Amino acid sequence: MKPIKIEEWGTFPIGELFDIHPTKAYKLTNSSLMEEDGVNPVVVNSSFNNGIGGYTNQKNTEKGGIITFSDTTSADAIFFQEKDFVGYPHVQGMYPIGKYKDKWSRYSLLFFVSVFRNRALGLNYDYVNKFTRESAKQISIKLPVDKTGNPDFSYMESYMKNLELAVSSSLTDLQSAKKFGVSSKINTTEWATFHLYDIFEIDSGTKLDKSKMDTTTPKINFVGRSNFNNGITQKVNEIQGLKPYDAGCLTLALGGAYLGSCFIQEEAFYTSQNVVVLIPKKDISFEAKQFIATAIFKESQNNYRAFIKELNSHIKRDFVIKLPVQEDGEPDYLFMEEYMKNIFQKTRYVFSKMAECI
Image (cartoon, rainbow, N blue to C red):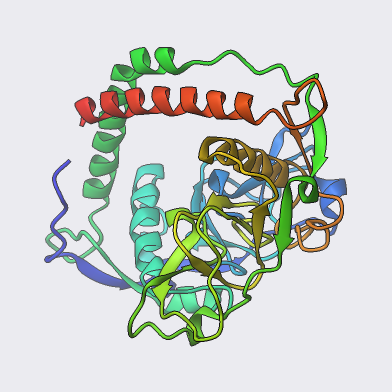
């Protein structure tokens, strides 16, 4: 779709459009709230899966049709919740108010979320400078307006409906590519469980503060608790007397909204706090590392929870993953490598088909 021209859009303070207050949460521990057979979504402090961290059979505490965000993370955990859900501590709800209260629809709210998230991310909120409801109310954003200067809800709805149709059409065109990429489910019954320390030296990282880093002559990657750009949040100056970690090591976020984000670093790097460095004890191929990084992320998302049960006290003690094994019980790195090469080949094919759809 063509770029949107925003020069003639109007400016609106968030606080005049929405009341922002915490969602209703149960006073339950994480383990007693989340249930394997749960049916009601629980919106938590996460930037993944539309903020849904699990499901419960407790009654929903919030009606769908509102926007949520976490006030404990950066500003990218902003989502539109279409269905009724269960709230969670530090998850804020945005409830339409004022003269436009009844004009918002699913499509216009989705449009708003995109604009709001982009605006908030540009203000560089992080785990120190947190994205709170008070800071959200102070933000002003630009929205399309009609001839009277009011938000053009018809335009927002029309734009998002057209976008939805375009995406739907592209997805239809991608079905043949998807069929090519379908892999049979892996049988993991004979896989073995490994502690992370069986495979890696687990280093605590450099624990640097991003806000205090010198960037006048940047050449070293700085890896933080992020799921974007391989975890790299910026480039910084090399610090005299502090050797960066070597390329080929893995980084792992221990907590926060990006709990479990694990990446192979292809250049030398430093790390922020709560990011450990995994240094392979053996020579492991790039593809096998990718396989392991995925296993780490899956284990983190399935069995740990941001701000409730994070990895800090577990990563060097009892954090385990399941991996394919050889007859001698050692990890089957060759299987992992070949499996990932096959995935990469299929992914390239799908991307080529996606390019044809654009």
